[in-house]
Length: 360
Image (tube, rainbow, N blue to C red; front, side, top):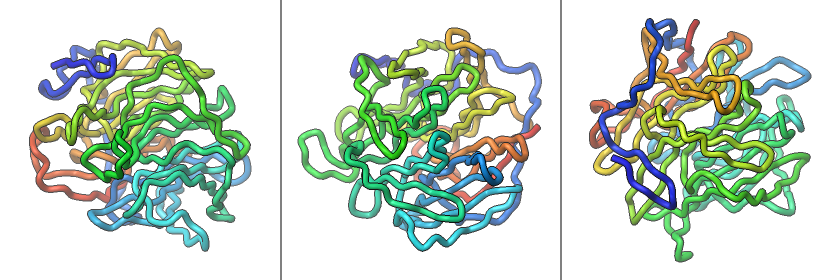
């Protein structure tokens, strides 16, 4: 079923993955559980791959939640091993923080998220060996969580887009029943935020996949969920590209089934990969464990293919993925799972702690 919201066509609740998108003739990849100990079961955390000019690469994980417990811990993933760090200063318990590697300034950037009482607009940076540091820029994006944040090396800044805050459109505080969805665009460089006024943008939404695609040198946004009415959510499956202050709807008809909270990372051997996620459609939810790849060497040639795999991870939502430049493989961690079937009301939620690697 396709509906229209804010001028955007939104694909909602047919059976999962109904599109006639071609798939590989045989399954050549597999998701394998690494069976390594690491962070406690969680979802809604930040996870980013760090490639500093000095020192070796590593993955940095921060925050998240398990039920009513919100985390404030910092972990490093390197050489297929997790190690917890204990910095003396840290951002505090945070759900849905937005994190990215800032190659221009050689630091991890963290913005926003929420704790048990408020949505946040703090800007933090992390340097290995020095820990976390709170910045005080004169201008910051409005408080939010569940947005997208990614490095844009072609334009030499970090891009922030979308998410939601805990205030209803009439200005009254509201933690869940009615979010205010956002679709503003911000850039960060040299310690400063700048608001980018764009003529068009993806529809206001939360939990998008926002990843820099090195094959085409543009930022790609896929999916997310919108809200229409109190407690009514709809995921969508549009694909947008962003470069030099301009958003472009790619209009890809054959695309993954509408979803939000998908784990996403750029794999130089395959393209932009999204894995898992859920449809926020009503009634109930659809949790997924499929893998899709956006590939092509130019923006007009970009296309989605479902990647068949010999084995896969559990049904999950709000996990995160990075591309590990040491092992040359995608790494997937955590998420919220369910013991229900693919589509249906998710009555039992399970927080996951598995570390998965896609190989070869």
